[in-house]
Amino acid sequence: MKIEIFGKGCPKCQKTEENARKAVQESGIDAEVVHIYDEVEMLKRGIIDNPALVIDGELKIGGRVPEIEEIKKLLTES
Image (cartoon, rainbow, N blue to C red; front, top):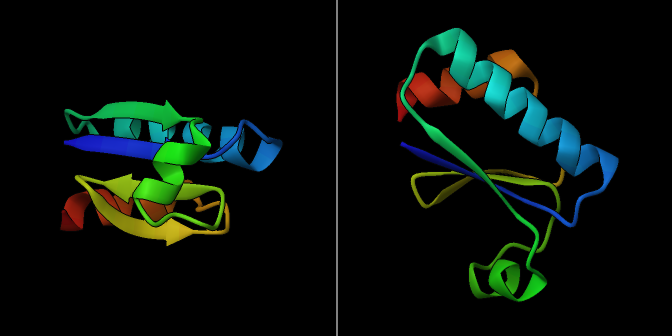
């Protein structure tokens, strides 16, 4: 499983990455977490709201910081 965090590195983007890493750890799921800072890549992928959480290529959350429990739920659904 691949989890991508899209954002320029603002505190909300950093918190989203932190929450995603904690959710993966607490779930025991084998997943790679990657933070993508490149604005061009964001636009190519149609992401306009930061931060954004993408799981296996599918945009799950955009424009807000998801809670750890919410991310864990998304991980088990994917």
